[in-house]
Image (cartoon, rainbow, N blue to C red):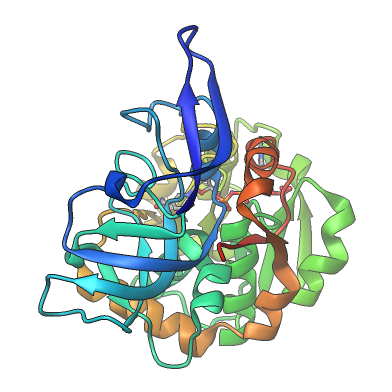
Length: 328
Ligand code: NDP
């Protein structure tokens, strides 16, 4: 089978390339999947390169998510012919991933493809879009509502998480403000449903004021760092920010004042270990709440051969929207 394999040489340097790999090298697990599509996330960029501390053993097959058809199963929940999605569970990091014609994983890690989605659409959404949906569900559980007048802020808006978040929020009837450091993406973001573009510079400037004007009823944050700290002081009373990513840094140089005086919430979003029921719910919401024509507009098609270059680009914040990898 064809697979994209990352190898590490004696000097510790990694090299990624497409190889013919014997199926006998697939890991031990109960469900084998013919992979049809995969995708590219920020974490894939790390695993395609030096590993970012995520990869345990080399040679390694990256790809943190995939969708395809079950070809063999020793588990009662799946049979050959079933369409499935995998995201998370450290597949593509600690375990062999989706950048291959076949993958073998634990049945508990899979979810059935929801009605209304194809495997191609599922990977057009991928971990990034799935995580955006988890963030929106968490924000709505904490009071965010399209009935409120204030906009919802999306940071890192041109990226995978951000683009899908903008499209879903717009479709649900929210006013959406999109933060971007790439002004050239304004038309793209407005087409996805952004009502307002907020230049990244406006939010990376630090301020000594722990509270600013109440601007956002919620925030899907892919950036973290000083930007998230600043946003906490701009949330409306009782508003919430969902911390999804760290494209702008892992430190959070924030004050506790917005929590104490405005009762704001900071919600942590993890896509990797989400329980099964939450996964099913998020994928069902994606099938109903995300307009697929918007997703098509986000797509950059790719093959396994393109991934080493694209991995380096995503780490530099140079990928727009979603990369869809056709495996066959
Ligand atoms: P992308 O690279 O596609 O998007 C990140 C976006 O952030 C960029 O497109 C850019 O948008 C913006 N950005 C990049 N660098 C900076 C910077 N230095 N300061 C401010 N903004 C910046 O990545 P994804 O959308 O796939 O992932 C986004 C984040 O979410 C990553 O940190 C990723 O690890 C994390 N993540 C977390 C998950 C979880 O389970 N919690 C799951 C999936 C992703 P623009 O040019 O528009 O400003």
